[in-house]
Amino acid sequence: MRQVTRQIALLANPTAGRGNADQILDAVTARLAASGAVVEHLIGDDADHALELARKAAADGVDTVVTLGGDGMVHVAVQALAETEVSLGVVPLGTGNDFARALGIPTGDPLAAADVVVRDQPRRIDLGRALAPASGSASATQTWFATVLAAGFDAAVNERANAMRWPHGDLRYTLAALSVIRSWKPVPYRLEIDGVVREQEAMLLAIANTESYGGGLRIAAECDPADGLLDAILIKPVSRLEFLRVFPGVRQAKHLTHPAFERIRARRITASAPGVVAYSDGERLGSLPLEVECVPSALGVLVPPTA
Image 1 (spheres, helix red, strand yellow):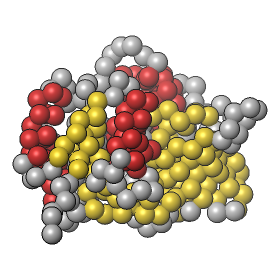
Image 2 (cartoon, one colour):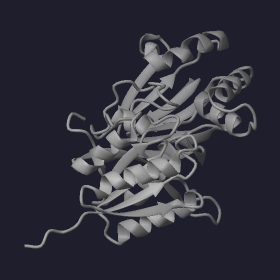
Image 3 (cartoon, rainbow, N blue to C red):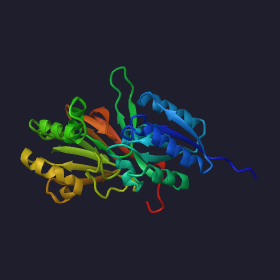
Image 4 (cartoon, helix red, strand yellow):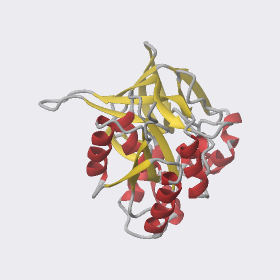
């Protein structure tokens, strides 16, 4: 019987890897090819082009699409691979890498991550699916997410940081957070959680499929991406000073014991609130209202044996 050669499409962000993307791309390609796979490079001009390339590769029957970049590139690939049998491999080169971290994929060694792809051990995980309702002549839009959908203070900070031209890196987000908190007030959310309506003011609403966002902020610590549920996290109203004291502790999950913290596990959540913009996987999603649901086992991901 003739052995079928494995087909791998390598979806690369040319700006990732702190300027070393070309060298890393070559090294990862060589490691994958050494396993006997045929490797095709997919280099998009922008996110839309990258998505077009990933969808075509999946339709053409590749076995695996591997992202070389950060959570934004994973987000692109997920739009193409959700509810298909094509596996996702991840070689993390971003600043956050929350998706890779959640699944135990090495984040500091591209070749170690490539070896995970070579071993070809898939795990089915859930995905979140956000649906923005139709408006006027525009039809409803659907977006998949793999990590966290943010729709509160955290999303507002992301929005502010994206509008800033200086500085770069973590300092930009620190300054954006300080700018946003000066005028931030509890948001009056209307939530429908598995059919039960709830009115709740909160500083923050995050709907999580994995435990962290923002490069290790463990907003939904211990969230299981394969339990068939999403974790809705609320930080209920506190003073601005108290919020500034609590929020930095999210990285160590210290917020879990704060009285303002609440976790709700649900299959479907509809969230609405005036003037709130949502982000998912760190990418701008759009304004509330949004209907969000967990789609169990929607994605196959290549993971280390212990993940």
